[in-house]
Every structure is written in C-alpha cells, then in structure tokens.
Length: 227
Image (tube, rainbow, N blue to C red; front, top):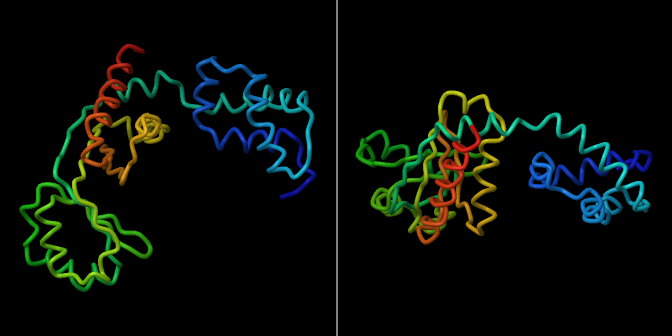
C-alpha cells in the first residue's frame, strides 16, 4: 500500500472495518478522542508508519463527517423493520456437498419429486459447493444416497428465522447488516444467512433460537418507536 497516502485515507479504512462505530457516530454517542485512541494502532499498522495523536484525531473528525453523509437515515431503516414480520422453522439441517455431487445425484431427487413435500428447502449454489437447507427428514434422505466423502458439512438441530419485509426492503441498504449484527453482538453464530427477494433467512443452532428470535423481535418493536 502506498506510503504517500495521507492519514485520512488510513483512518477511513480503519473506520470501515468497524461498521458498529459508524452507527454509533450516527447516533452521536462517540467520543472522538476515545475513537482516535482506539484506532491509532490500526492506522499505523495499515500505513506502515507513525502518526501523532493529534493528526489521528483531526483525521477522525474530517473523515467521520464525510462518511456520515453516506449512511442511510435511521428513519428509513425503521420504516422497513416496523413493517416486517418474523416466522420460525424448527428441526432443520444444513447440508453442503460438492457441485458435482449435487448435479449427479441430488438433482435427480428433485426431478423424481421425492423432495416435493419438503416444507423448507433452500438451495445455495457457490463456486465449489452447494448448500441445502431443509427439514431433517429430507436431509436424511439426501444423505442416504451419498458417500462420506461427498458430505462436506452436515449440521443437524438447526432453526430458521425468516424476516419478511415490505417492498421497500429491496431498495433500503443496511437491513441485512443491521439484522445480522444485532444477532452477532448477542454471541449467536449464524450458520447461514440468505436473502431471497423480500425474505432474510437466518439459520442458527436450535439452542440459540430463543435468543436470536427475541433479539429480532425487540429490534422490530424498537423500530416502531422511531416513527
């Protein structure tokens, strides 16, 4: 990375790596001196050279002001969340297989209709693998035709929380990040997160479902108070 860049350039990178700080800045609850102290080490590490405390703080003041102008207004997020609803699905499995296995074996199950009665089924295709989110019974039927080498991951006892928003959710930036961060800060791991049209589908361990659901329900209730 070029050493000719000014301190503001590196401060911006450090702030972008902490989206929660940007939200706090938007709410006006950040002490700029404390923030400058927090990111000082990161800025110097990224830049590969030293900066004074004063230069970091002044850069934070400049950069934060410009970055805040690009953050979606809280009211816009609140309008979408206040009109959203939650649904829960229990007893799910998350199964990942190589692309080749999916095409040679599992697609045949779809074609034959043997998975047609599955209540929950999401197929996520990546560059090297396919992940299937489905109910436990369907997952076990799929696993029964696979070898151990063809099963990259098989997680049982999973649950899904589906947040369905109004049409505006499609054009409102920040919804997915806000929802996922709200759960992450409670220490809940997201096994998978999928965005499908107006649905945000969050997969968590069954044991974490209660906490994750309560967190999102509280978030939606809070959104209504902001209107």
